[in-house]
Amino acid sequence: MKPHVDMKNLPGHIAIIMDGNGRWAKKFMMKRAAGHRAGATALRRLTERMNRDGFKMLTVYAFSTENWKREDEEVAYLMGLLHEYIQQYINDAKKNNVKMTVIGDVSRLEPSLRVKIANLKEITANNDGMLLCIALNYGGRDEIVRAADKIARAAMTGEHSSPLQEADFEAYLDTAGMPDPDLIIRTSGEMRLSNFLLWQAAYAEFFPIDVLWPDFKIDHLYEAVAQYQSRERRFGGR
Ligand code: FPP
Image (cartoon, rainbow, N blue to C red; front, side, top):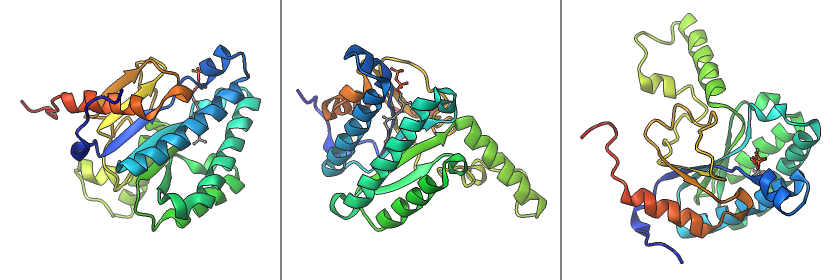
């Protein structure tokens, strides 16, 4: 049953750490690849429904800077799945009206995938539905270090006067111009941020849920939103 949710006060930006694809596959005695495929399908369904229900922004952790340490076969499968998934979004761009972007260091991705990502951003740029942001080769520390490096370079050319303000720094992050997440959901019962949106998560509400990602449905999302709406956010004040 859908918990009571105030649809006029939905969190503006929800972020999800999609965890548990491997365990889901194991539960059904399938290969990890099957878990990732089921995970991609779960994301697709959720995105469509969230867009229809009027959510404004979703960021998902699809591939972290640490995920390269997995077996070559699994990394290759995930990259192939991304190709396929992005292509589907390109094909459906007009119909589903979702706007899409990517955060993370895309320079390490294979050129054909980078071209596809650029294409995806361009094709969906004028859509005015939900913004879906995919974190790809993303790590919070990596993002902060890359931002610091860009600032150091800018300082050399005199583009910055010190002291640096938080807003100056934010302008160099991958998420420049995007709102911080209000609610971060992690599936599979784990309680860690795992290097996700470290800077941006400063005042986010965290909602762990003991459901494996491929089983995550819109009702689980509403459970998180209902919990979020029952909390009092003080942003450090009283
Ligand atoms: C974590 O589960 C999941 C990932 C590392 C990949 C997330 C990818 C998807 C949901 C599908 C692809 C996404 C797109 C955008 C096409 P895990 O493998 O760590 O699971 P485990 O902890 O149970 O082993």
